[in-house]
Length: 457
Image (cartoon, rainbow, N blue to C red):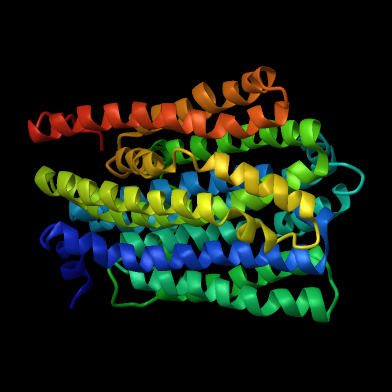
């Protein structure tokens, strides 16, 4: 089958089966990626120690910030690519690939060196203590030196899905996970490189798979491929892709800001143990969130293509299936978090009973309203995938800035133990954001059914 015929499938095959075809590789890949994060944390916790786990948690805001810039370019270009393929504008689609590579490489290098210059003061501001700072610095510094690698790898991986190659994207993610899981115990337990071993395992795995993904775009017979002529910055493409990707940037950058306040609050009210417990809970919660993100990744090319082709009935259909699937997944997360909190947390900190106790209690609070979180995550991704950045930005900002940040700052003052207020800020903000997302999504679906749709791209 020619590449053009594969693109046409996005506008012709039943949307339920199409979403399933895209979702299974994406979800499997995201589960594998999330399980790696869990295994990585287990290796660090068991092989390096409790302070290393807390130090690892302190790097989350920086990683969210670097991911914010990478996602802005990667998701923006992938969405624009899907729309242009739906419009059969293959010339512009080819140029998008070149602009993606140049923007991701440039941003990755500049951001990495900028953060390296002030890494220790940043980590201190996040709440690093004398015990946790060396671990956080050693891990994060290595990742920042090679910051362009994950930017390019994740950006090109998103383009694999947009060009109807979801299985290739899954294989790429599997590759990083498998290589990581081989190198992690080798570097930590055999070579005794400590937390730096985990960082080197991540960098090497992503670099190897980046070379493979790059090769997938070098086939001469493909419509969308890497060649010299595409490496010319097109300011129209840059502007459109960055505007579309802006919601993803705001999601991650706001997550960075909120994570800073949560981490500082955890350190202030509960010390290094609370910081480590929050880091463990975050990795476990991300297992569920990553699965929903996999559904979003499946939704994006289908929604973008059918929006570009003005097939709004198919657009509504794929959204419905995505919301149902995400709700099932997030409900499973609620059940698992409530029933298996202690065993989950013990995997990371078996020799730290106080951290297990704090982490298990916090996990049960975090997942209180998880059955509604799946719909909330899908709604923002849906608006972004069809080029409605304003609505996606609005949902992103309200969840993080209007609800979560004020809750983190205010709720601790209403509890005898302020740490409880920090934990409860998360489900309270999720509940408020879910109500708002549902209202906005229903409102927009009615417009689509009436074909009263303004052009945005």
